Length: 360
Image (cartoon, rainbow, N blue to C red; front, side, top):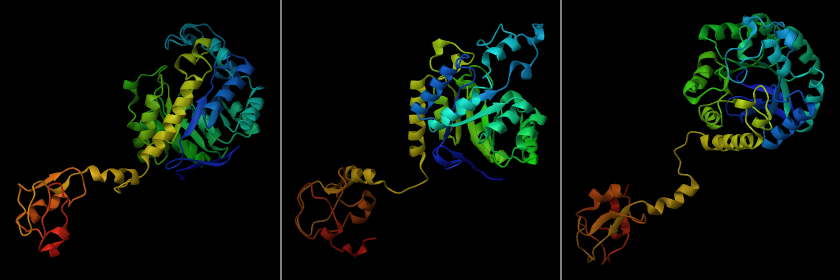
């Protein structure tokens, strides 16, 4: 099983996985507020911020539920959605299917990958006709084995959120996808709480996912702000997904826990800086760091001495700057004699010491 996803983007071939640039996904969800022009504007803002991809959700209210106001169909949790029926929520949040080819074409013209989360088999068929590069599986659907099998059969890369899944649940989902033909899989750590709080996140799960399941790992982040996502990158996340809107005050089913354009731009910049800072394991002295070696301690003459006089703890000290012998030689040179008169403030070197043949 490959540990990298490879897709074709408007900018060329793109690899997603360890030691590759983090794949940053702006999740539009229902933040278009049923206005296609707003959807286009969200794509513009995502491109301007430096995101790699925009993600949609592909469903209708009728493919997800039935139109009923019985108590089982009323949302009683999550402040952002409380009080609606499921049907009302999904009617408001869904992205009309006739928009999606237009949005994909527009996103690609802006250099972005556009892909989607299908919620039933008919939406997979629709997205296949749209020729998406990869699929996303939402936390709420990651146990729908028939849907997973359908997605796996497309033979395209899959990103799956693990929200609300135990280890055994996730193992079953991965087996289903792989046996159906999914070539590469990424698993996003996800807390299905809207919004989630930092104390819920347990970001240490991200490297554990990669190690335990032999997959690409990342984060689908529902916390407010950008700090948690940056921490995830430092821990090895290869994919970061954040909900995105033009303006939280403009409303939308996910607006409350979505980033605004200036925040997404700040996140992208912070992620790119974090990637550079992570670098690779090294113990070499970096060139700019080497410039400061002169400010380390070294051995200096601190009291005038004459030729033939012994070096003692009174006339030699380890002080800054670093032009003399390293401090590790202090005990070795004490008791030896000097070849010539030395003034206070002279950096000590082996060439000034008699019996200097024992230089390492």
